[in-house]
Image (cartoon, rainbow, N blue to C red; front, side, top):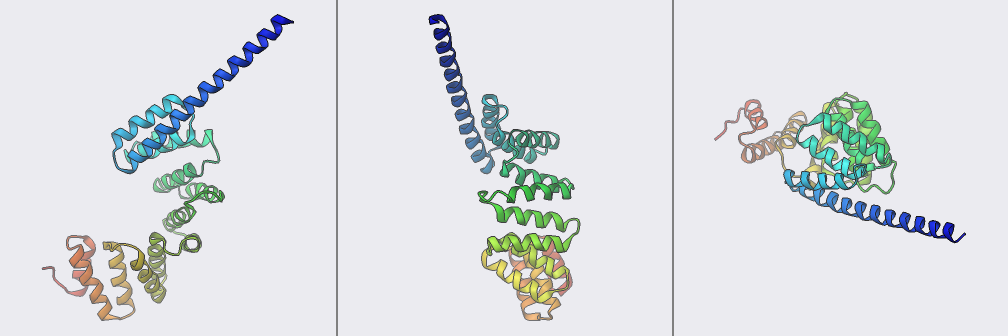
Length: 249
């Protein structure tokens, strides 16, 4: 009995030690994932890769480590590795909303539109995921590529319900409205966009086209001048110069 009790105690101690060692490995992995994600966000890809490799060495099945490494490989255009890493991430944790969001965006870029939207739908079911508005925006953009404008509009409006000041959703709704011949709606959305988003060649050209459709020559000329002054060498500025008869300086 004494020998059995001793063996049992040794087994418990060994099990506790193994769990403690595993917890330490997981904690180190999480630290490397956080560092890797920060470096990736700053565009320091080499350093990010080193940190993520350390994370995966500590914990090969860490869902978030595989997710962020997949994003890095996507940036590097290593698409086969990207696909494999996203799948491994979701195999380890099927409820990883960040991985579903990122994988959905990747699939849409690769032309797998329906599959991408499926992953977006999974991501937004997580009520604690803080980027639901961005998920709906990305799903809307994905569906505009099909094209499926009505379905895209539903997602974009949901994005704006969550965040009425989301610049990307406002711009896409302006574009969607203009393409549907709804020029007044397009004007309302593009004006809201300029209240919260930066000028870009695409947004200013859309504003020019919208005001042209509404036959508002003063507003059209104002946006055209803004486009040519801010982005003189852009293809969009070239279109404005051709359409309006204005010449670049």
